[in-house]
Amino acid sequence: DWMVLDVIPVIPPDLRPMVQLDGGRFATSDLNDLYRRVINRNNRLARLQEILAPEIIVRNEKRMLQEAVDALIDNGRRGRTVVGANNRPLKSLSDIIEGKQGRFRQNLLGKRVDYSGRSVIVVGPKLKIHQCGLPREMAIELFQPFVIHRLIRQGLVNNIKAAKKLIQRNDPSVWDVLEEVIESHPVMLNRAPTLHRLGIQAFEPILVEGRAIQLHPLVCPAFNADFDGDQMAVHVPLSLESQAEARLLMLASNNILSPATGRPIITPSQDMVLGCYYLTAENPYQQKGAGRYFASMADAIMAFEQSQIDLHAEVWLRFDGIIEDDGDDDTVLEETKSDDGVVTRLYHRRRIREDADGNIISQYVKTTTGRIIYNKTIHEALAT
Image (cartoon, rainbow, N blue to C red):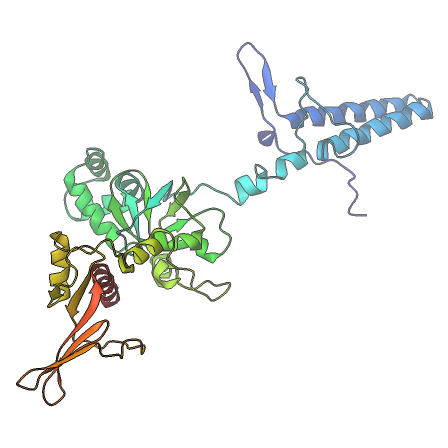
Protein backbone atom coordinates (compact mmCIF):
# COMPACT_ATOMS: atom_id res chain seq x y z
CA ASP A 1 0.00 0.00 0.00
CA TRP A 2 2.80 2.42 0.95
CA MET A 3 4.57 1.69 -2.35
CA VAL A 4 1.80 3.30 -4.42
CA LEU A 5 1.91 7.10 -4.75
CA ASP A 6 -1.40 8.89 -4.21
CA VAL A 7 0.14 12.28 -4.99
CA ILE A 8 3.17 13.30 -7.08
CA PRO A 9 5.87 15.09 -5.00
CA VAL A 10 7.03 18.36 -6.58
CA ILE A 11 10.67 19.32 -5.96
CA PRO A 12 11.49 22.92 -4.85
CA PRO A 13 11.70 25.65 -7.54
CA ASP A 14 15.43 26.23 -6.82
CA LEU A 15 16.17 22.74 -8.17
CA ARG A 16 14.25 23.37 -11.43
CA PRO A 17 15.03 27.05 -12.15
CA MET A 18 13.65 29.31 -14.85
CA VAL A 19 16.13 31.92 -16.10
CA GLN A 20 15.23 34.98 -18.19
CA LEU A 21 17.45 35.42 -21.26
CA ASP A 22 18.13 38.53 -23.37
CA GLY A 23 15.19 39.42 -25.57
CA GLY A 24 12.53 38.38 -23.06
CA ARG A 25 12.88 34.63 -23.67
CA PHE A 26 13.15 32.09 -20.84
CA ALA A 27 15.43 29.09 -20.33
CA THR A 28 13.79 26.51 -18.11
CA SER A 29 14.63 23.17 -16.55
CA ASP A 30 13.34 20.05 -18.34
CA LEU A 31 11.52 19.07 -15.14
CA ASN A 32 9.18 22.06 -15.53
CA ASP A 33 8.03 20.74 -18.94
CA LEU A 34 7.52 17.25 -17.51
CA TYR A 35 5.55 18.60 -14.52
CA ARG A 36 3.49 20.80 -16.89
CA ARG A 37 2.52 17.73 -18.97
CA VAL A 38 1.35 15.92 -15.80
CA ILE A 39 -0.68 18.94 -14.57
CA ASN A 40 -2.31 19.59 -17.99
CA ARG A 41 -3.34 15.95 -18.48
CA ASN A 42 -4.58 15.66 -14.89
CA ASN A 43 -6.74 18.81 -15.27
CA ARG A 44 -8.06 17.57 -18.63
CA LEU A 45 -9.00 14.20 -17.08
CA ALA A 46 -10.84 15.93 -14.23
CA ARG A 47 -12.79 18.05 -16.78
CA LEU A 48 -13.73 14.99 -18.87
CA GLN A 49 -15.00 13.21 -15.76
CA GLU A 50 -17.07 16.29 -14.79
CA ILE A 51 -18.86 16.43 -18.16
CA LEU A 52 -19.40 12.63 -18.12
CA ALA A 53 -17.38 12.02 -21.30
CA PRO A 54 -17.53 8.56 -22.95
CA GLU A 55 -15.54 5.81 -21.18
CA ILE A 56 -13.15 5.29 -24.14
CA ILE A 57 -12.04 8.97 -24.04
CA VAL A 58 -11.59 8.90 -20.23
CA ARG A 59 -9.58 5.67 -20.46
CA ASN A 60 -7.33 7.17 -23.15
CA GLU A 61 -6.74 10.29 -21.00
CA LYS A 62 -5.84 8.10 -18.00
CA ARG A 63 -3.30 6.27 -20.16
CA MET A 64 -1.77 9.58 -21.29
CA LEU A 65 -1.62 10.80 -17.65
CA GLN A 66 0.20 7.59 -16.65
CA GLU A 67 2.68 8.11 -19.51
CA ALA A 68 3.30 11.70 -18.33
CA VAL A 69 4.01 10.47 -14.76
CA ASP A 70 6.31 7.72 -16.11
CA ALA A 71 8.21 10.28 -18.21
CA LEU A 72 8.63 12.55 -15.14
CA ILE A 73 10.11 9.74 -13.04
CA ASP A 74 12.17 7.98 -15.75
CA ASN A 75 11.88 9.34 -19.29
CA GLY A 76 12.21 6.68 -22.01
CA ARG A 77 11.98 3.71 -19.64
CA ARG A 78 8.45 2.82 -20.73
CA GLY A 79 7.03 3.81 -24.09
CA ARG A 80 8.11 6.70 -26.27
CA THR A 81 10.81 9.14 -25.06
CA VAL A 82 9.52 12.68 -24.49
CA VAL A 83 11.67 15.22 -26.37
CA GLY A 84 11.99 19.00 -26.11
CA ALA A 85 11.88 21.78 -28.70
CA ASN A 86 15.23 20.88 -30.27
CA ASN A 87 14.46 17.13 -30.43
CA ARG A 88 16.55 16.43 -27.32
CA PRO A 89 15.23 13.93 -24.71
CA LEU A 90 14.08 15.72 -21.54
CA LYS A 91 16.02 14.97 -18.32
CA SER A 92 13.77 13.19 -15.82
CA LEU A 93 14.21 12.77 -12.05
CA SER A 94 16.11 9.48 -12.57
CA ASP A 95 18.50 11.10 -15.05
CA ILE A 96 19.31 13.83 -12.51
CA ILE A 97 20.09 11.29 -9.77
CA GLU A 98 21.96 8.52 -11.61
CA GLY A 99 25.33 8.36 -13.35
CA LYS A 100 28.70 10.00 -12.89
CA GLN A 101 27.26 13.51 -13.31
CA GLY A 102 24.27 12.67 -11.11
CA ARG A 103 23.36 14.20 -7.77
CA PHE A 104 24.91 11.40 -5.69
CA ARG A 105 28.29 10.94 -7.35
CA GLN A 106 28.82 14.53 -8.45
CA ASN A 107 27.48 16.53 -5.51
CA LEU A 108 27.10 14.27 -2.48
CA LEU A 109 29.96 11.78 -2.75
CA GLY A 110 32.41 14.09 -4.52
CA LYS A 111 32.87 17.57 -3.06
CA ARG A 112 35.40 20.33 -3.59
CA VAL A 113 37.22 20.94 -0.32
CA ASP A 114 39.47 23.67 1.06
CA TYR A 115 43.18 23.07 1.71
CA SER A 116 43.54 20.86 -1.36
CA GLY A 117 45.24 21.11 -4.73
CA ARG A 118 45.85 19.11 -7.89
CA SER A 119 48.70 18.87 -10.36
CA VAL A 120 50.57 16.60 -12.76
CA ILE A 121 53.13 14.22 -11.19
CA VAL A 122 56.75 13.88 -12.30
CA VAL A 123 59.51 11.62 -11.00
CA GLY A 124 61.61 12.85 -8.06
CA PRO A 125 64.65 10.52 -8.06
CA LYS A 126 66.49 12.45 -5.31
CA LEU A 127 63.59 12.33 -2.85
CA LYS A 128 63.46 9.98 0.11
CA ILE A 129 60.62 7.48 0.04
CA HIS A 130 58.56 9.45 2.61
CA GLN A 131 58.99 12.78 0.79
CA CYS A 132 57.19 14.49 -2.09
CA GLY A 133 58.11 17.60 -4.04
CA LEU A 134 55.48 20.32 -3.63
CA PRO A 135 55.57 23.30 -6.05
CA ARG A 136 56.17 26.61 -4.24
CA GLU A 137 53.16 28.18 -5.95
CA MET A 138 50.89 25.42 -4.64
CA ALA A 139 52.47 25.26 -1.17
CA ILE A 140 52.02 28.97 -0.44
CA GLU A 141 48.31 28.69 -1.29
CA LEU A 142 47.75 25.50 0.71
CA PHE A 143 49.60 26.70 3.81
CA GLN A 144 48.67 30.40 3.57
CA PRO A 145 46.72 30.58 6.88
CA PHE A 146 49.61 28.89 8.71
CA VAL A 147 52.14 31.25 7.09
CA ILE A 148 50.04 34.33 7.96
CA HIS A 149 49.71 33.17 11.59
CA ARG A 150 53.47 32.67 11.90
CA LEU A 151 54.30 36.00 10.20
CA ILE A 152 52.11 37.82 12.75
CA ARG A 153 53.49 35.79 15.67
CA GLN A 154 57.09 36.55 14.64
CA GLY A 155 56.26 40.26 14.44
CA LEU A 156 57.09 40.58 10.73
CA VAL A 157 53.60 42.06 10.08
CA ASN A 158 50.85 43.48 12.29
CA ASN A 159 47.69 42.14 10.65
CA ILE A 160 46.32 39.67 8.09
CA LYS A 161 46.02 42.29 5.31
CA ALA A 162 49.72 43.20 5.60
CA ALA A 163 50.66 39.50 5.64
CA LYS A 164 48.70 38.85 2.41
CA LYS A 165 50.44 41.80 0.71
CA LEU A 166 53.81 40.39 1.79
CA ILE A 167 52.89 37.00 0.28
CA GLN A 168 51.69 38.60 -2.99
CA ARG A 169 55.02 40.44 -3.30
CA ASN A 170 56.92 37.11 -2.97
CA ASP A 171 59.01 38.56 -0.15
CA PRO A 172 62.03 36.32 0.70
CA SER A 173 60.97 36.20 4.37
CA VAL A 174 57.73 34.47 3.30
CA TRP A 175 59.63 31.50 1.82
CA ASP A 176 61.69 31.13 5.01
CA VAL A 177 58.49 31.05 7.08
CA LEU A 178 56.89 28.58 4.64
CA GLU A 179 59.90 26.26 5.01
CA GLU A 180 59.42 26.34 8.81
CA VAL A 181 55.68 25.65 8.49
CA ILE A 182 55.94 22.63 6.18
CA GLU A 183 58.91 21.11 8.02
CA SER A 184 56.68 19.30 10.52
CA HIS A 185 53.42 19.25 8.55
CA PRO A 186 52.73 16.14 6.41
CA VAL A 187 50.47 16.30 3.35
CA MET A 188 48.35 13.53 1.84
CA LEU A 189 48.59 12.55 -1.83
CA ASN A 190 45.74 10.75 -3.56
CA ARG A 191 45.40 9.35 -7.07
CA ALA A 192 41.98 8.49 -8.49
CA PRO A 193 40.64 5.87 -8.64
CA THR A 194 41.31 5.00 -4.98
CA LEU A 195 40.86 1.23 -5.24
CA HIS A 196 42.57 0.28 -1.94
CA ARG A 197 43.80 2.11 1.15
CA LEU A 198 47.27 2.71 -0.28
CA GLY A 199 45.65 4.94 -2.93
CA ILE A 200 46.06 7.80 -0.44
CA GLN A 201 49.31 8.15 1.52
CA ALA A 202 51.08 10.82 3.57
CA PHE A 203 54.39 12.47 2.66
CA GLU A 204 56.69 15.14 4.05
CA PRO A 205 56.60 18.03 1.55
CA ILE A 206 59.78 19.48 0.05
CA LEU A 207 59.52 22.82 -1.78
CA VAL A 208 60.45 22.51 -5.47
CA GLU A 209 60.49 24.80 -8.48
CA GLY A 210 58.05 24.35 -11.36
CA ARG A 211 54.35 23.48 -11.22
CA ALA A 212 54.43 19.66 -11.01
CA ILE A 213 54.28 17.45 -7.91
CA GLN A 214 57.38 15.28 -7.56
CA LEU A 215 56.84 11.67 -6.46
CA HIS A 216 59.33 8.98 -5.43
CA PRO A 217 59.36 6.26 -8.12
CA LEU A 218 59.12 3.40 -5.59
CA VAL A 219 55.65 4.42 -4.34
CA CYS A 220 54.14 4.34 -7.85
CA PRO A 221 52.87 0.70 -7.73
CA ALA A 222 50.72 1.48 -4.65
CA PHE A 223 49.03 4.35 -6.49
CA ASN A 224 49.14 2.51 -9.85
CA ALA A 225 50.73 5.75 -11.09
CA ASP A 226 53.13 6.47 -13.92
CA PHE A 227 54.60 9.65 -15.30
CA ASP A 228 52.82 9.91 -18.66
CA GLY A 229 50.55 12.76 -17.54
CA ASP A 230 48.88 11.33 -14.42
CA GLN A 231 47.47 13.86 -11.96
CA MET A 232 47.32 13.62 -8.17
CA ALA A 233 45.45 15.55 -5.49
CA VAL A 234 47.10 17.06 -2.39
CA HIS A 235 45.24 17.42 0.92
CA VAL A 236 46.49 19.19 4.06
CA PRO A 237 45.49 17.58 7.39
CA LEU A 238 44.51 20.42 9.73
CA SER A 239 43.93 19.04 13.24
CA LEU A 240 46.75 17.67 15.39
CA GLU A 241 44.97 14.30 15.50
CA SER A 242 44.84 14.02 11.70
CA GLN A 243 48.49 15.11 11.41
CA ALA A 244 49.51 12.43 13.94
CA GLU A 245 47.48 9.82 12.07
CA ALA A 246 49.05 10.84 8.77
CA ARG A 247 52.56 10.63 10.24
CA LEU A 248 52.12 7.36 12.15
CA LEU A 249 49.77 5.35 9.93
CA MET A 250 49.74 6.86 6.44
CA LEU A 251 53.39 7.78 5.85
CA ALA A 252 54.66 6.07 2.69
CA SER A 253 57.63 4.52 4.53
CA ASN A 254 55.15 2.71 6.84
CA ASN A 255 53.26 1.15 3.92
CA ILE A 256 55.79 -1.24 2.41
CA LEU A 257 53.58 -4.35 2.32
CA SER A 258 50.39 -4.74 0.30
CA PRO A 259 47.31 -5.07 2.56
CA ALA A 260 45.80 -7.49 0.01
CA THR A 261 48.64 -10.00 -0.41
CA GLY A 262 51.11 -9.24 2.39
CA ARG A 263 53.91 -9.04 -0.18
CA PRO A 264 56.13 -5.96 -0.67
CA ILE A 265 54.39 -3.37 -2.81
CA ILE A 266 57.50 -1.15 -2.89
CA THR A 267 59.71 -2.95 -5.40
CA PRO A 268 62.34 -1.52 -7.77
CA SER A 269 61.36 -1.43 -11.43
CA GLN A 270 62.37 0.00 -14.80
CA ASP A 271 65.22 2.53 -14.45
CA MET A 272 66.23 1.27 -10.99
CA VAL A 273 66.62 -2.35 -12.14
CA LEU A 274 68.47 -1.20 -15.25
CA GLY A 275 70.79 0.99 -13.14
CA CYS A 276 71.56 -1.85 -10.69
CA TYR A 277 72.29 -4.20 -13.59
CA TYR A 278 74.52 -1.68 -15.38
CA LEU A 279 76.54 -0.93 -12.22
CA THR A 280 77.18 -4.60 -11.42
CA ALA A 281 77.62 -5.91 -14.99
CA GLU A 282 80.92 -7.10 -16.48
CA ASN A 283 82.04 -5.61 -19.78
CA PRO A 284 85.26 -6.90 -21.38
CA TYR A 285 85.37 -3.87 -23.71
CA GLN A 286 85.59 -1.34 -20.84
CA GLN A 287 88.87 -2.30 -19.20
CA LYS A 288 90.78 0.99 -18.91
CA GLY A 289 92.80 0.80 -15.68
CA ALA A 290 92.14 -2.92 -15.20
CA GLY A 291 94.40 -4.72 -12.70
CA ARG A 292 95.15 -1.64 -10.60
CA TYR A 293 95.27 -1.91 -6.79
CA PHE A 294 93.35 0.43 -4.48
CA ALA A 295 93.67 0.78 -0.71
CA SER A 296 90.05 1.88 -0.19
CA MET A 297 86.68 2.35 -1.91
CA ALA A 298 87.16 6.12 -1.85
CA ASP A 299 90.43 5.82 -3.81
CA ALA A 300 88.78 3.65 -6.47
CA ILE A 301 85.80 6.00 -6.84
CA MET A 302 88.13 9.02 -7.06
CA ALA A 303 90.14 7.32 -9.83
CA PHE A 304 86.90 6.64 -11.71
CA GLU A 305 85.74 10.26 -11.33
CA GLN A 306 89.10 11.40 -12.74
CA SER A 307 88.60 9.04 -15.75
CA GLN A 308 91.63 6.92 -14.83
CA ILE A 309 89.59 3.69 -14.81
CA ASP A 310 86.40 2.53 -16.53
CA LEU A 311 83.18 1.71 -14.67
CA HIS A 312 83.42 -1.98 -15.61
CA ALA A 313 87.21 -2.36 -15.34
CA GLU A 314 88.26 -5.20 -13.00
CA VAL A 315 90.46 -3.79 -10.21
CA TRP A 316 91.87 -5.10 -6.92
CA LEU A 317 90.38 -3.49 -3.81
CA ARG A 318 91.72 -3.87 -0.28
CA PHE A 319 88.85 -5.18 1.81
CA ASP A 320 89.21 -6.14 5.47
CA GLY A 321 85.57 -7.13 5.99
CA ILE A 322 83.99 -10.57 5.83
CA ILE A 323 83.62 -12.03 2.33
CA GLU A 324 80.80 -14.50 1.71
CA ASP A 325 82.41 -17.53 0.08
CA ASP A 326 80.15 -19.66 -2.09
CA GLY A 327 82.87 -22.28 -2.63
CA ASP A 328 83.66 -21.27 -6.22
CA ASP A 329 86.86 -19.42 -5.26
CA ASP A 330 88.74 -22.08 -3.23
CA THR A 331 91.30 -23.05 -5.87
CA VAL A 332 94.72 -21.47 -5.28
CA LEU A 333 96.08 -20.24 -8.63
CA GLU A 334 99.47 -19.10 -7.31
CA GLU A 335 101.26 -19.18 -3.95
CA THR A 336 104.50 -17.37 -3.03
CA LYS A 337 106.46 -17.25 0.23
CA SER A 338 108.94 -14.51 1.14
CA ASP A 339 112.07 -14.86 3.28
CA ASP A 340 110.29 -13.50 6.38
CA GLY A 341 107.61 -16.19 6.13
CA VAL A 342 104.86 -14.01 4.56
CA VAL A 343 102.65 -16.13 2.29
CA THR A 344 100.73 -14.61 -0.63
CA ARG A 345 97.93 -16.71 -2.12
CA LEU A 346 96.20 -15.75 -5.36
CA TYR A 347 92.70 -17.05 -6.01
CA HIS A 348 90.44 -16.28 -8.96
CA ARG A 349 88.82 -13.25 -7.25
CA ARG A 350 90.90 -12.85 -4.05
CA ARG A 351 94.51 -12.11 -3.08
CA ILE A 352 95.44 -12.84 0.55
CA ARG A 353 98.70 -12.14 2.44
CA GLU A 354 99.34 -14.02 5.69
CA ASP A 355 102.21 -13.81 8.18
CA ALA A 356 104.21 -16.79 9.41
CA ASP A 357 101.57 -17.51 12.09
CA GLY A 358 98.70 -17.62 9.58
CA ASN A 359 97.22 -14.21 10.48
CA ILE A 360 95.83 -12.23 7.55
CA ILE A 361 97.91 -9.10 6.85
CA SER A 362 95.88 -7.85 3.91
CA GLN A 363 93.11 -9.07 1.65
CA TYR A 364 92.30 -7.83 -1.83
CA VAL A 365 89.19 -8.70 -3.83
CA LYS A 366 88.76 -8.45 -7.59
CA THR A 367 85.75 -6.28 -8.40
CA THR A 368 84.62 -3.45 -10.66
CA THR A 369 84.19 0.26 -9.95
CA GLY A 370 80.46 -0.08 -10.59
CA ARG A 371 80.15 -2.74 -7.89
CA ILE A 372 82.13 -0.59 -5.46
CA ILE A 373 79.72 2.33 -6.07
CA TYR A 374 76.72 -0.02 -5.70
CA ASN A 375 78.05 -1.45 -2.41
CA LYS A 376 78.80 2.02 -1.02
CA THR A 377 75.32 3.30 -1.97
CA ILE A 378 73.58 0.33 -0.30
CA HIS A 379 75.56 0.74 2.95
CA GLU A 380 74.93 4.49 3.06
CA ALA A 381 71.19 3.93 2.52
CA LEU A 382 71.03 1.32 5.31
CA ALA A 383 72.94 3.59 7.70
CA THR A 384 70.41 6.47 7.41
